[in-house]
Image (cartoon, rainbow, N blue to C red; front, side, top):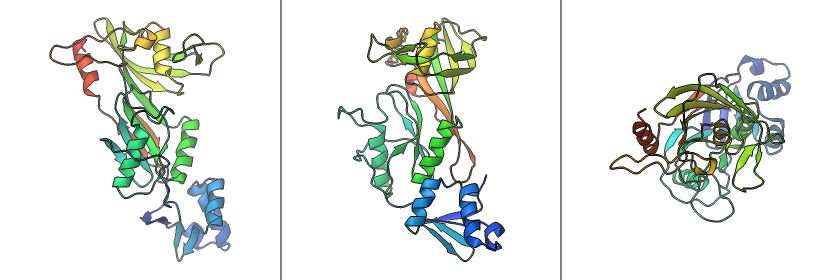
Length: 305
């Protein structure tokens, strides 16, 4: 449900709930109902706001302390960052190849979370770094961050409800038949290789939807929508059905051909093209596109796509 007009004032969001609250005989009950049913404030967050004086009624305006300053939770480290979308609730950034979303415990390398923390610091914002989903280290594409506790709760629930749509482009070996539209096969760990996953009857449910394909000479461009988000899901599923990704040595993919005068693709040919989700406060349908990176464009040209 879309909320009425609102404005941010520092740590506070000011909203005008309208006649459902202003004309109510029991204003406290009406405010509580509006906060839960219209604003969608989770019970746990609402209880904390109430406890800390974060819900205030001023004339015809309701004030909510939705933007309190928070420590980033990770050291800010500057790295060039491509921002695809940003507002008071959400941040979507491009993740380049070779960068992990978050630290793996080794202490090595700048991650996307480090770069986002630096972005917040440079913008003068005191936000905790909260990524909503992840991408493999060598996969490029958009990553969604929540900028406050309310946005995180709403977006996490949207992920659980499969209401955040993630579309990918993959370049794979062989001609993918048009009849291949869904791969619904469970994925588990490979007991013989710590870094790999495999299709396994005892694994977690994993559903990959193929929403479009284009056949080239000995290769195909496959457009994919993820219904679940298991580790290496697209790579495992497509390799299992005989169409491993170009450049994906871990799952048997072919080596990407070199184009004269440029470097070949040195990773799996997988890129996140779009994120579609409802804005956590306004409910507006957002579609955030991330253009293909240069290495994927070069591979497409090399394969005649």
